[in-house]
Length: 263
Image (cartoon, rainbow, N blue to C red; front, side, top):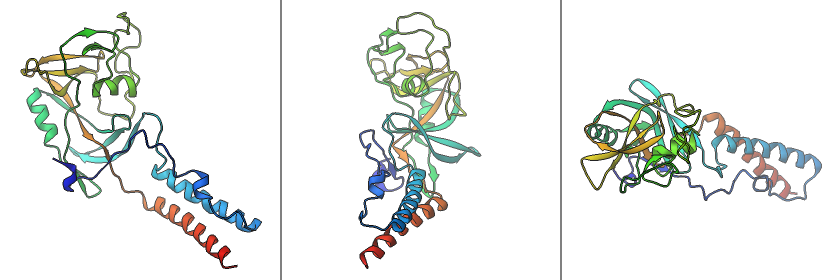
């Protein structure tokens, strides 16, 4: 469903937007013609405002990372909502048990999760770049190891820092497998479906193995696990204490400015 219809508002944050509004120059850009007492008060208030803005996460990261945007109640448990600011997608920290490709895609498409009164229903399985199946080790092929062009591969290698069974030269290596899971509590060492059909043979679909770090295409009748992703970042409501912190700091800065102009 199109997010523009209003049921689910997504806040997508791109890597290119790296200017921070928590810069001291932004907060402290008042007149320099203040008394020492006023300067001290201004600096204290600015500190409060900066702390509040930092707590809200308004300083955008310049590098790719996984960020827990919040949690959502699903299947009786609060699940992490993990945002990948590189691919601009949100992962639901929940692994669905082994099932066919058709059932797993239907499950993801049917998800409708509400966070802070907003419903998000554009969930899907992770995507893979489709193409003729060519297996390799250096990450440039469609199948094989060390591939980061698929969303599961990007998560496994780039974000979580795991190793495949083979290195980029095709040699077996130590420390392979799903060693690092980050903020995921429900990511299994197993086989996961991609939502992408193998175009050259529509009875096949792509998959990714988190137990070895490789991907390929196989029959949609196979029983594999599934993760769901959502385009963009789920907007969360800041804590009241954080809003109070920002409000107190900014209000104080305004008061100092007005007092100075009144002289």
